[in-house]
Amino acid sequence: MQGPSACTCSDSTTPRSLCTSSSGTDGSRSSSSSTSETRRARDRDARRRCGNTRASAALAPHMTTLGIIGAGHIGSQVARVAVAHGYDVVISNSRGPETLAALVEELGPRARAATAVEAGAAGDVVVVTVPLRALDQVPVEPLAGKIVLDTNNYYFERDGHIEALDKGETTTSELVQQHLPTSKIAKAFNHIYSADITTDGAPAGTENRRALATAGDDAEAVAFVTRFYDEIGFDTVNVGALSESWRVERDRPAYVVRQNAAELEANLAIANRLP
Image (cartoon, rainbow, N blue to C red):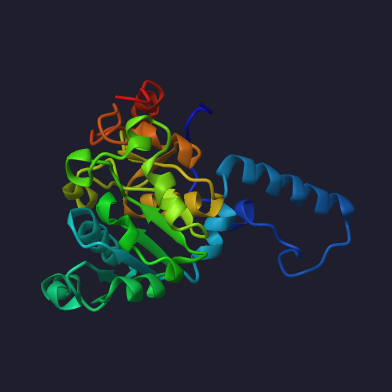
């Protein structure tokens, strides 16, 4: 396993000049090759230190709506924290939009209820937070090409036994990726009690700030989760590829415990593939 890495650079605190490349200068064009080379070297160094913040920043001006498929404990809490931080939310469940009237009223004018297809289509980024057994009911086409946050955990008592998971041959997030082959999947919010999502966040730089993990094969998706976590009050530890996301699944040391980034990294490192 490549060691998990904690992200300490966010778009809100890093000067724009350090996280994006620029072809010009502050109001004038320089013909100096040494100046251009200095700038390129500075940008390369910033990208190494900050990870893919460029991809995260590229989403920022346009990414305003979260589509949420699943309005249970996690889905409703992600909706609450997203609305509180300026996102619009389109949320769905399996029983129909009319059953979400009370939640939408609570969330206010930034939220509306919809079908799963409508929520998927409306979301610039989509959160899939349904029981694993219902994964085949998640619409595929509306999520094509989009960043999708997977909150799934495998509970064989609820979902029935899935041999590939029981044997440690795949992960829940890889199953989501198989179902949504052109979406950009990133693990998120599967290892925190739902109530803590709206209560445990703290400003960046707070001592002992709680950390959450993500994993993904797409750098843009991981960058979005990192930025979103930071916005709502959490540090991020990147586990690595989706194939490593088992380290933060049910019954592992990092599952639903409060931990800072260093503690989360340590718990991920000692996890066993088959708990």
